[in-house]
Length: 380
Image (cartoon, rainbow, N blue to C red; front, side, top):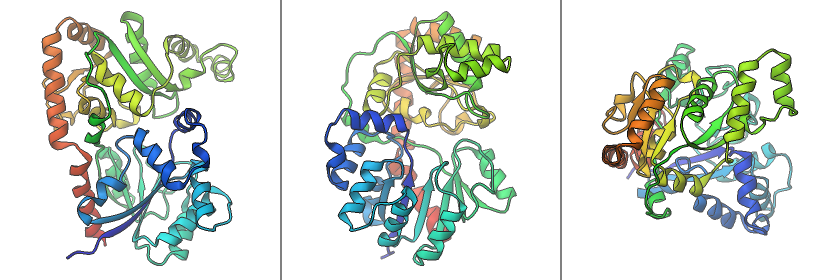
């Protein structure tokens, strides 16, 4: 029998999601590592991103997974294992040393750097493969220095790392079908919804912001956003900076979206919102460059929403356009298509059911786990 792959996965979560989770559960920060982890995964803050349970099914993996920027969780582990509390990197290194993985996977953009990865390689001889993730089109081989393998959900990003002599593989997002057991099956509202981030930074969401601005201006949109649009008032520093740099359009779009925003949703509330909306809007990051790749494709269809997404050249690799998901090519088409779907409930439900069938058949994490295993065994 093939021995299981021992994999350590270090992620960082949205700080707002963590704050909301602990804020709603007084006393959780004092509980054990196991209880805090169970609470986090039970709410599925990032439903497609919990690997341990999915990978360990069938006995082919042994996984240790943690959240690097969740201080209460990491402090609990340090206390329980007799490790002096230090910086996030120090605690994480102690965890890796104790687990002795074969694969170290760093799913973090801000804290872990090449120096840390080299320290892992030096201190933990069991590590045979260090793997990184670029899901936002950063395309920076130096930033991910020390990685033997790069995964990405975007094909052109994979091509970039290969061109830099870094082995890279396509690993699309997926859906955790166990979410369906945790959200109520209620009647769908006749509304257009969006939930996600609107970050007005290079390569991220300028196109998303413009499309949502048009939608908000012409439709009733239930907008639940995090990111730059939460700082929309003229007195706030980000808005003052835009005005100083003559970014008047960006400042105005931010203000309109900020005033319409009902606040971010994470975890189960986010999935409930999508499941109960008539139409869910989706826009890829600017750096996707016309390639289907984001998480919302699988989350929204997975919970049975009718997804209206921006047309991408390779969308048919995942869904049949305008059969399993509805599509638009510009903001004018977005508004027209959304209105049509709201006025055509039978067509809307047909697309929603077809999209969910496809996701549950082809795009669950259980399916992706087999792909990941093949990639790793090829390297190991």
